[in-house]
Image (cartoon, rainbow, N blue to C red; front, side, top):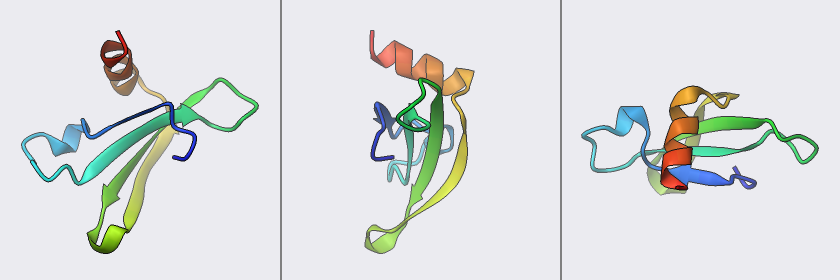
Length: 70
């Protein structure tokens, strides 16, 4: 999450929820690779969060990131 090159509150499950409790972070797996991963978190009270999804970058968030960067 600290090395994210893209972040957004446009998470599928946030649709219709104005609290934006979830965020997506996209960035490299580690410093020696160009492979991107998507990390989704849910914000909790008191500034805490729960990581609930991590995987190689999929088509949905790749398209979203590319559209916003145009």
